[in-house]
Amino acid sequence: MFRMKKRFTMLSALALSFSILAGCGSAANNNSASSAANTSSDSTTASNSASSSTPVEIQFYFTGSQNVKSLWDELTPMFEEKNPDVKVKLVYIPSGTGAQPTYDRIMAAKQAGKGSGDIDLYEDGLPFVTQGQKDDLWDTLSTSSVPNLAKVDSKTMEDVANLAVPYRSSAVVLAYNSEKVTTPPRTLDEVFDWIRQHPERFAYNDPSTGGSGNSFVTTTLYKDLPEDAIHSDDPAIEKDWAKGFATLKELGPYLYGKGIYPKKNQGTLDLLTSGEVDMIPAWSDMVLEQLDKGQLPATTKMQQITPGFNGGPTYLMVPKLSEKKEAVYKFLDFVLSPEAQAVMVKTMHGFPGIELTSMPQDIQDSFKGVSEGFRNFNVGELSKEINKRWQSDVAAQ
Image (cartoon, rainbow, N blue to C red; front, side, top):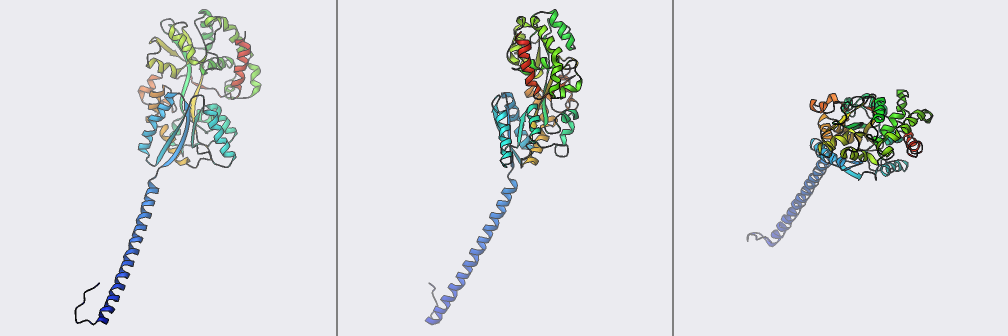
């Protein structure tokens, strides 16, 4: 292996060869150990770095029409750009198919001791807020965890015991043909008088098929009841509905088709569009969206009555057993920012979840005439009883 000078004896040469080989072996081992240690250290550093840079992923389950999906598809990248430490996985379930099964999944996970069932945020209406309150599913929210909650009407938060974020709202208003109706009614009694004076020019949909018809019926039933009745689910109130149902029954022959009740919210909007009626109760966001798309005549105007028809927010709820609540709080705070709320107004044509005074002036101006007198009705399971009674006491007559 090594060429030795002649003056070395063979023994010396062998001794030197073993010495050199031993030294080489030791150096190789040391270098190998050092290299392994460095590799291990680099790997640990890389692992720690990867761990610290990997965003927390939250799963957000929501349902609704395509415009709801479009809203979250636009807002989520805006949030993630500002908050690279959080990733929002959107789980969209088309309208009419996902609300109850999603709720049931959260409930089943709790009962099985499996946390929140990998659901970190859930969107739906008031009935699921109140049901979740009974089942102790929702996290209690505060401005300390979600600072922009300070921009939300405190009464709205009190109505849901701080268990949900009302991120957008819509109200039922009177939508009318301004060429035919120059002075729209401003109270419910004036609406009743207008209906009687203009036979078959007013329509409201079957209340079991859409919220605008349900709003007209419910507002009529509660017209002469104490204001706090609209926030009660006490069955004892049912006996006080008699006067309201009598009014609805009496108005029947004066309505479109002498008592025809279209199906769904869109059913009455179609009658207004075709000119078959001149006035209807309608969701403000649907009217604004269809005006924007040219689907309703430009002569269509809106008016809120005093006290207002009922309407209400759509809520975001955080499962109490979610393990990623800190990341969810960040997302909720962004959703309630004026920037995100402006996108919601543009996409959904709904009222902001935060108070109008926190929004830009042009958005405040766009809601003049329809935001005044906005009321939240929270009657729980009584809404189902209202629909049953309406079918038997009004529609069947």
